[in-house]
Image 1 (cartoon, rainbow, N blue to C red):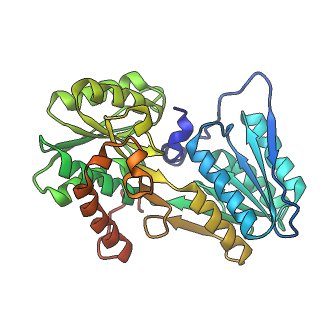
Image 2: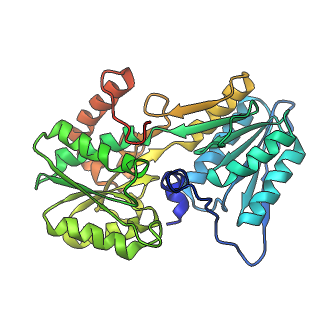
Length: 349
């Protein structure tokens, strides 16, 4: 599993630690573009990804979003797949040179590049998914996610399914941004089972996003104390959490994409980021002249759970066998969407 499957956690790191993250450089920069121009006379859209799409579900959803937008406008779309920092820069420049109606980019890696290009090309519209520029530009729109809403629902599942009454989380770092993946999990569990005991362990260390061994160690600490439901928010370290859960006969929850496939029978559900929804709706807003930052949560369809999506029965997620739990979670989701229930955001200022 690539770290790209946990883009939200990486974005939080960039925000919380104020550092610029870069992907590992390959021996040679590659800039592969797939063009599916339909020959239509409508709008044109160019998507730039921070990595090769391959089997990366997070990026595949973004590709689907830009393709759907092109169909809706009888237009065409092009996808530039980056492989390293150099090709990210090259692809952004190539996208701008092509002068499409909207340049769409996924990830915080592009924030500084877009800021530079937005100043140089004030007539070019940009849409950044899962990140934003530090400075506001009239020609830059951003799509961000309210992950904490989905995490809350996953916590409710954990509270309903826990046999020990102990629900925990393995998080990357102890900061407000990262606590969006642990605090709401505990809150959701306590909503449905008030006496639930909760605890969070943090990976930390020199490489918190890639330390599967340390993530596994933190998970085992919780399992040794009787915790049987764990939110895995350890980026690439989630594999370690899943391994620990499987060995203990316990359960874990994934993020961003369907991680049940990597640990069937162990991963209960996943907090899904619908990048396709953010791309489609973001493009529509830009074309309508509405620029700025838009937040996508349960109400907008930008955040969901695998258990609440079509195809859950084939997802290999444990939650598929608990329709009664899903029914209760759907009620909570509807309450959040209507505004009746508000989920606290640990990262809110």
